Image (cartoon, rainbow, N blue to C red; front, side, top):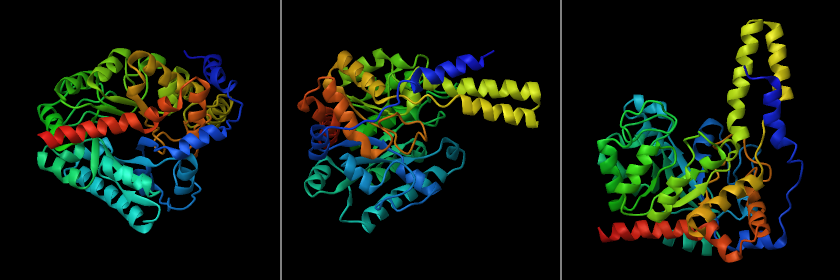
Length: 397
């Protein structure tokens, strides 16, 4: 049985340490403002299908809008074309939603051409940065819209997709998922193996976030160009959480020339947050069993349990620990930012609550002794290097 005391300890272990404000220095703000800042995973498109707002203006909800992006120095958000795993059971549904989400980003750029522009290449983002516009690059989260047809890869490339996360919360026709106990392919499917090769040939980055370990190793072996983890963190700090990457995987990613883009979600960053919801769920089930699921007594005790055990948010410092560890393992050239803003709900770390807060991350890096040249690598140069190499490989094949 999980005791209330143990759950409280999980929350208190973090929350008692974070009663502080973050105020980035003028130097940190200058670095964030003057350099291109790339974040490879922001879930705005799907969020807006559920709860539309005009993110070209200041908004009341969500983690991203234009004013906050400008404040934070964000220049190149990779907007996630997220496809729920359940849609693969309905032929055509994944592909239709993917096109609709791409349409929505094109519409955003059309409505506010002075603020946003669609970006399809390294040259595009460089020119748009010089023009003072925010580049809307696109990554597809879940490859189910491929629907087993390689022609769909070309179709989505032509629409601007520049990376594909091979699977998501369930195994699909391409790859097994880290979240799915059913390992139907023991890694990549036969189609998935061909897809990895064709993604190389067409100039699309391969994203190994979400896939099973076997699928990761097979992707690394097959890919002739560097791969990315668009929004993953480190298993070292969340033991047993396969969605994050092990040290051996990170080393292999480094040898491949790839980049891990650190996810900010607290459950990706700390063991305390990672375990919290499972522990709370266990306690709620115990209360329901003891008092009756629908009883007033159970409802009162559950409310008290939730009030007494607030979510243990991670801290900016713990996000920095992930960056530090990657640098120690494989060098400064292989780490970047993949926040998962608008994708992880109310689980973001203290100090990194929305896209206005990147200067706090820069300040933390400065405080830990990173040079401005090092910080530029994290903000943009590492991802641009991979993107260029992927473009170059395709141009030669």
